[in-house]
Length: 276
Ligand SMILES: [Ca+2]
Image 1 (cartoon, rainbow, N blue to C red):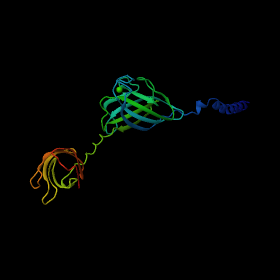
Image 2 (cartoon, protein in one colour; image 1 turned 90 degrees about the vertical axis):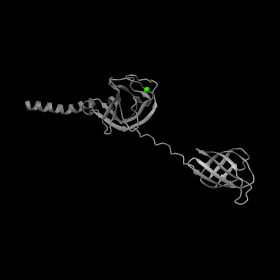
Image 3 (tube, rainbow, N blue to C red; image 1 turned 30 degrees about the vertical axis):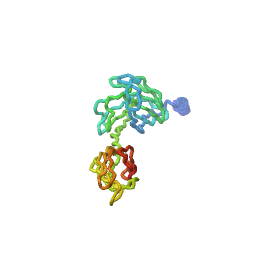
Image 4 (cartoon, protein in one colour; image 1 turned 90 degrees about the horizontal axis):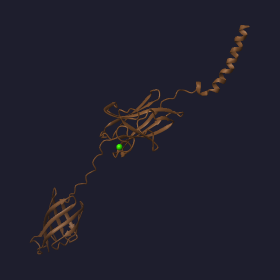
């Protein structure tokens, strides 16, 4: 008799247990929320002002350090309790004491925005539950540490204590723009006055001799001046190889190493375009 009763009880349990699972699918089948994975943590520059010092979650008139953080969270969501950004050393470990935090009121607030919406108005106990592909903009009020080559570590803390971290290095100082190629006009030039000019350049100092013809020229002149950037200022005078005796000043623009054009002329100087 006892065996029969036990058998019946077992049968009933066998029938009931699956229905219990069906009635409460979240009770026994749903796994604990898994922490998300950081996909990327990037530096976007100091282009916006969203937060201020300490707990101030509103603009304060100074541009903030701006990071982008992408996390792939479980489809059913996970609670992110806090995000913090730390100044870090070359190994990626916190160093230097600069901390922006969404929860710890001892640190300046880390402003978290999602699709333009501010997630935390100031320090908060938790940021909330996030599902799937999650992209945050993080803003850190400038403490003077957003310098070239500085490392920053982001730490995301999930409910239950799991953490995810990622380091980013700020870019190096951009190289200076290439210097314009130094002009070199040393050489023999033709001019639209029909003459030939023999120009010597020593650094920025320019000497020249020009003549309309190597033998019995109608005119011949010498000039001396300075090349500053691409502007050549000269004083010129005819010399008595030719017969004309003029003098004056010239302001010329060196277009390239192979072309010079006159901008201002005095003393009746004839030529205006030199090429070679
Ligand atoms: Ca600011």
